[in-house]
Image 1 (tube, rainbow, N blue to C red):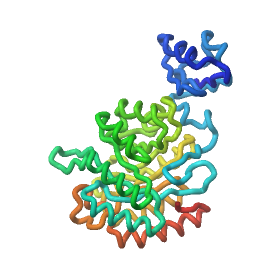
Image 2 (tube, helix red, strand yellow):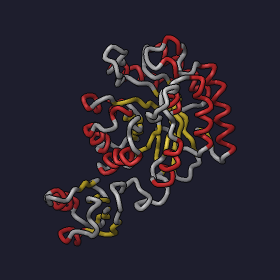
Image 3 (tube, one colour):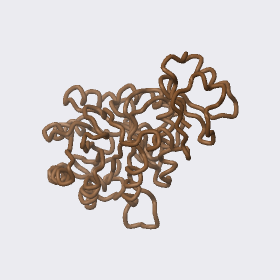
Image 4 (cartoon, one colour):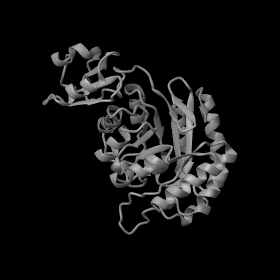
Length: 332
C-alpha cells in the first residue's frame, strides 16, 4: 500500500509513527509518500489523521508499478530528459573502464563531435577474477571529472560496493548500479537518499520481479530518478556471453513506470553482434541505449571482445538515428 501524506501533516510526527509500529514494513520519502508492506490492504488506524489518497498494490512492485503512476516517469538523465512523452532515446557510450587519461580523452572528443551527451566508463570494476584489471578507483573518478569539465559531457560510472558509493555519488552525474551490485542494500539505500539519477542493471540471474524490487529500494528511499537497464541474462546458450531479454524489456515497458535502457554490449559479448542488437532495441522505443566503445578494443584491459572501435561506432550511430525516427523517436 502507498499512502499519500496530507499536505499539512507534521512530517516529523509521520516519520515517528511509521518507524515505531512494529510488524509493518514501511519506508518514507520524507516528503509526500509512505510505502507500507504490500500485505496491508487498508490504512492503519494510527495513520488515518495523516493520510490522503491510498493505493493498494497487489505485489511488492509499488512505487515502480502502473497502479501508482499509469505512465512512464519523465526524469532528468544528465543533460537530457527521457521517459514520459519526450520521445527521446538517450545514447550512452564509452569504454568499459577508465584506463588512462589519453584513452578517455580520445573517446570523449569523438562523442562531443557526434553530439552524444553522456559518457560512460568504469572506475571500480566488479570483476569475476581477482587477477583481472580492477579499475583505477578514485584516480579514475578524478579523470572523469576532468572530462566533464573539458568536453561538457555528463558522466555515468559504476558503484562496485558500498565502500565507495559516496565517492561515486559525489563525482558522477548519473550513478550506475551494476549487475553484480544490484542486491547490495548499502548501495541501494545510499542511492535512495540522494537525488541523482540512478541506472540499475539487471543481474544476469535475476528475475524481472527481483529487478524491479531493487528499484523499489531506491524509490522508497525518496529518489524517484530511477532507470532500469536490461543487459542480458544467463541462459543455456554458450555461443554468446548472455542472452538479451527483449521480452523482458517489453514487460518492463508495460508493467512499470520507469524508463528502460538496453545494453547490447554486455548481452552479446562480441562486437560483431552489438550493432544489430542495438538497432533492434531502439526499434522497441526504449528510453536509452548503452554501448561500449574503445579506441583500441584488442588491447582493452576489460571486456575487450565486446567493445566497438571508433570507426564502427561512427557507422552505427547514424543508423540508430534512422531507426529511432522510423518509430517516432529521437536520439539525444
